[in-house]
Image (cartoon, rainbow, N blue to C red; front, side):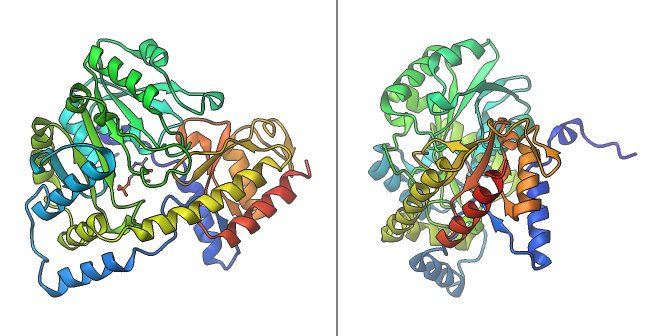
Length: 396
Ligand code: PLP
């Protein structure tokens, strides 16, 4: 019997792991599995960024940097935030971390006291509830509806507001739904947050992957909401740099100072090489971002049309990111190959076993009526994978 920490034992393993691990094992056995699980761009990191990483190594930029990141990258982040988001910050308002996930972790650790409540919309990105629990907070959920484009409103926020509410996580564009909050919706949420003195952790990691509508950072609406917001972004999704591990946060310097202190004693600086490469990513030629976005948009359009032509399945057209939430309610309760489909995990298992197609069950995002399909995979894979799903599902 190991006497382990309560906090550690409270953290759930990823429910999606079982499916992904199984898909990987099947692939290793030579089985032709089509994966719709990817949470990362299938493109290579653009060449100008790769070259800068090599230059950093060759020139010996391979030592500790300041714990909160190199000044050159903080300046590049300030430029990016000004240019793309109309946000004025100086380098004291910026911290560079080991990915956006780490930036969110630092933000929660800086803001949350034990028992504080943090509001999260459902379906949520899998890590939010666990990160909140690690920080000592309590996740409080708002279930959103497909007919409202999976978005919550101020009246939903008021229903869960208590005197313990400390922060709200806003993820626009959203993983897994692709939802984007428009200017009016953001204004209402901002007024609510100011009125109730609630911090907003605004996860904008998918900002560059917006196909319809445009991305607005809630912090850009006015000075009061800017002071309450921690803007989170990073290199992973826009620049196909998931393995480089660079994310960043922008906020009031008092928040950034605490985040930097926490980071200085836990991970120290993020990888020096990745930091130099990221400077070029942010201020260099942006044409590869546009090219990747075009590919994603083509795939999205094809997938949405095809999924909606499959009897028993349906989906909304997501406005951003690279995921589609596929509604499986029409299939629930049916028996397929002797297996009754009671939930999203059953359906994901059947798809993997019978069609060799890997998808993520919606229960991992808090909503059992869906499966999530990623279009961060080639058009050939998408065509073949959806054909397999169609041929299989339409038998029932
Ligand atoms: N936020 C959301 C909504 C994500 O989907 C992800 C990655 O899947 C992240 C943050 C973390 O990205 P990073 O690789 O920068 O840690």
